Length: 273
Image (tube, rainbow, N blue to C red; front, side, top):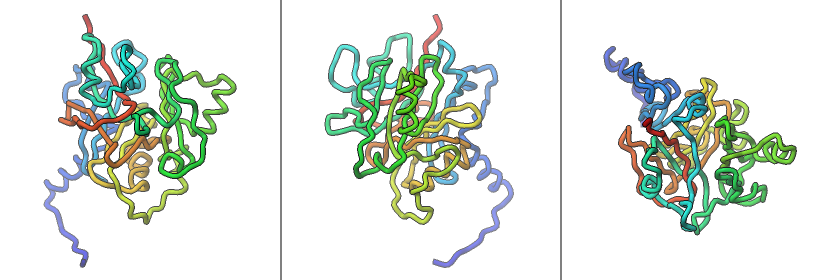
């Protein structure tokens, strides 16, 4: 197909620029709205179509917002499976701001990687070799302690921290592969790859935000990792899952996937009395 270059009218050029604003830079129309200042969900069209929700790390140190993992309700051994079920189990004082699937799972919707929920180890750190995306090493763990400080750590490095007790996760989810490792794209990602799928992942970014991204079109691993590294400025980012397992709940941008999944990750807001 021949290549064509079009000269865009100036107003249309400005419109494209507006669409390419990083989700790490919330557009705050109402400075008095503390919710808007603390978190934001946006749909973007460049460098590909995607939806992103972010929350400032400092907001997670407050009593108002909480980043949590959800799998089974406290009174039931069956997994929640859907965002709708999750919403129904929350206390009346809380509402779900946004959520997505938190990692890969088996046929029983149980996590296949290291999982900690409220200090309880659901699944030990998985260092097994194997096929599939999870074992495209290095993989990693997104975790945070009781202070709410979120980190994404390569799995072998976290194993050492767990052994020395330098890391004490209150919540943790292991998945793979890592997308960005210390500001470098995963070494096995090929810029010329043609394997495109819907993908979702999370990143800890240099502006102090935690980004949760769901691609709205099929993309390669390299494209997805480049978004976190170059557009969102996240020195460390982790692939959570893709294809039919990629799911997002973000009512502020009219996103509510009805898929069934294993562990979910989400931000809740506690209403003031």
